[in-house]
Structures are given as C-alpha cells and as structure tokens.
Length: 266
Image (tube, rainbow, N blue to C red):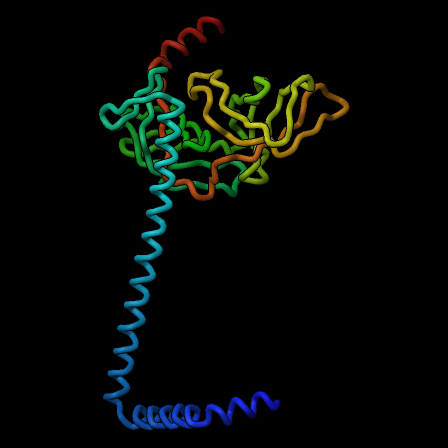
C-alpha cells in the first residue's frame, strides 16, 4: 500500500494531466458530431492500415515457408533422383517423369481420404500416376479431367504401398488404420529383421508407380505378437498431410510395357 501511495505522489502531475485530457476529449466528442465522425474515420483508417500491414507480413512469411519447401524438394530431386528439366517436366534417367503440381483440396479426417490437384489430361496425367513430395509418398491418381485430377491418399484404408526398412532391406506393405494422420502401419516384416525405433522407411520400388528411395517416415513403435512371426510396426510420416501444397506427379514412361509383362505372368 505504501508503494502505491508513493507512486501516486511521485506521478501526481502526470495523472492529473491524463484525467484532464480524458475529460476534455469526452466533452468535445459528446457535443460535436462532426468531430466524432472525423475521429471514427481516422480510427478506421488506422485500423485498416494495420490490418493491411499484418496481412502483408503473414503473406510474406507464408511465401518464405513455401519457397523453403520448394528448395528442399528440388534439392531432394537433384541429390537423389538425378533429373533434368524438359517441357515443364522433370525427366529422370530411371524412366520416371515428375510434373510439379499444386494441391487444391485434401482431406485427412475420414477413413478414405482423397486429394485434388491442378493438373489433368492437358498435362498427360493418367490414372495410376503417383503423387509424391520430397518428404514422402502422397497418393495414386484415380480420376482425371481435362485440367484436374483426384487421387487416393495414402491416408485411405483401401490403399497399400510397398515400402522397405532402409537399414535391413526388408520389404513390407504400408497401410493406414484410419486413426492418426501422422502414423501408418507397416506389415509383413519378419521377426528376423533387425529393426529399431527411428529406422528410416523408404519406398521399395517394387511397383510400376513409385521409384525406390522416396523417404516415407521413421519407425515410431513396434512389437512382436506371440502368435505370429511378423512385427507390428508403426511409422511416423515425414510429410505433414495437414499442410500439403506443392507436390510432384510421378509418371513411369515404361508403365505399359511393365503392365503387359505382368499380365502375361498372371
């Protein structure tokens, strides 16, 4: 209490000045509608200017984040996939073509999630083309229009992806159990495999859709049920599906030849 009184005494002149200013301002605006309108107009102008600055700042940092992601993705392609540009596409020496695209819509809260992208038949996009980012496999094209395409997300209980434990070279099938959009399950890995928490999971390259070595995630948990010889493995995804924007469509230039050969075997 003593400190409060000392503060009042020390700043009495400033306090009185502020009180008088407040009373004067109230009297002016309560009796002068012109001044009120001017004050409101001025206040609105200041608020609008602040909002515009705030929007520009947010847009700037959003652009910075987007550019950083693009740098990471281009670095990944350059260092891991050995590519060159040709007609707005990325041509790989391993017969895969990567076409940059943007995500228009994306769901993560259903048991069967889908993605829409801004490329279609005009860009030679076809059913069964893959979708990836530098951080992982995203999905597989299932419908195509002239300018757009939809894809089955890997966060879809009906889709399984071939994957491999990078350290041990053991292959398995990656699927989503419909629960956590950051976690997928890896099955068919035998108990003989030497696995650990944190081991990297990559694409296996055992299909015509995705090449090998695309990063997917890391082992976050695993156990070995008594009734089986195979691990139950949980994989934490590298990619955040809640913020998907820039992706690559994967086209295998030899997919028809590959599928024809598989059909002969079957």
